[in-house]
Image (cartoon, rainbow over all chains, first blue to last red; front, side):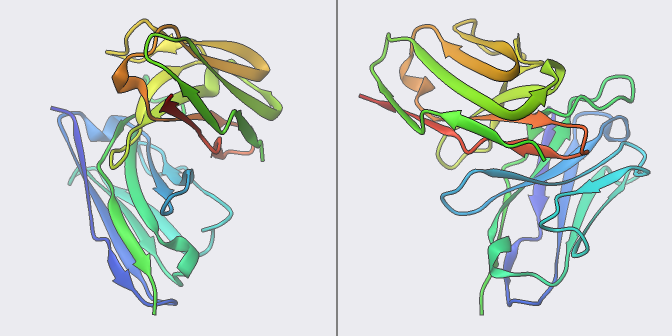
Length: 123
Length: 109
């Protein structure tokens, strides 16, 4: 079945780094745009970044630009989020989500979500 | 960046009643890029509606979406116990960013 499984979350000190991974299965990963979306404790959803199916097009939310890097390895069916210079406000559940890409064109809504991985930034 | 404002913040209704949730955009949004999600406690969001009015796979027909421009609506025609959750609207805009509304909590009265 179609599945996304995130990993790599944990407790990190302010200014530290963390790398999240998302393993995809049950679909042709290389055909789809992918996104990271986060949710701070008790708060709403915040889009973080998305990457095209080939990895050639990448966009970030202003709140993470210059600190976070999204990437993918289509041979490994995996999506990544490298997070540097972490701040307390980055504390959240981070979801990996699949864009409803059709014939290589992103539709910019997310039809498959992982269960999320928790990142806590605290001293 | 387009800001989405959802109302009401909390909606208290009983099973069997009709729910109407609003999502208003700070500037015009292409209907193609307006979606709605449902999120239950401890779970990931689930896609309900895309393209403003198309139901996602497996979504019951009591859920419907409508609207255009800056005003969009999610309607649940007859509430079932499993429908009580938080609902988010989401858009993609020309600024190459995705934004979500702050959510509407639908609770049992």
